[in-house]
Length: 187
Image (cartoon, rainbow, N blue to C red; front, top):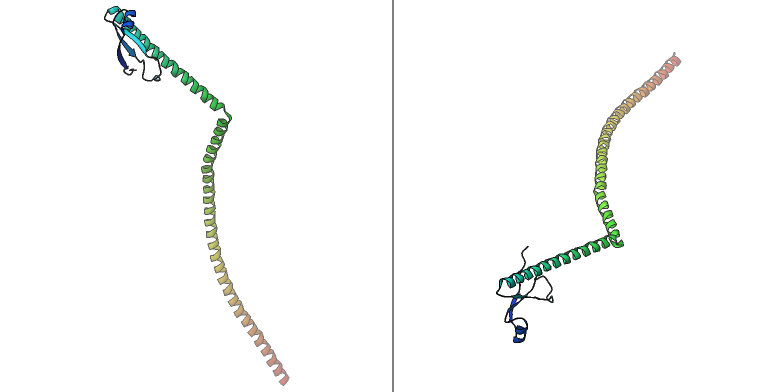
């Protein structure tokens, strides 16, 4: 992971500082990381011309960088741990448990509605088929009733004709009887 460039500022020491720190030297202020808060302490690293001093300086810079990385890592671990603890607290809280149960019930009801609707649609389809069958049976019964009515009408007409004939026959028979009687009386 690449680290952001460090902010560097040069400072020339006053004579009092020079005398106490072995001569005129160049000082740098190095901020280990831009992610640190602005009130973080700046690290002062001495850079000089000799190899031993420069290797010590580089070692110091490396140590400071490693320290900053470890501090960031520790901060990340602490923040992660805190986040996990808070998540566990939330999961254990009553309102979370109630909300979770409510959500499960809502999801269950939502899933049941299509099932109920599907069952209702199937029963409506069955009822529709039964209604169509009953309509067909009703139409057939109406046709049969019409046929029976026409047969009854024909039978009534025939009966009426027969009744008329029988009545006429009876009347004729009565006339014949009367004529017979009249003939007998006249003889």
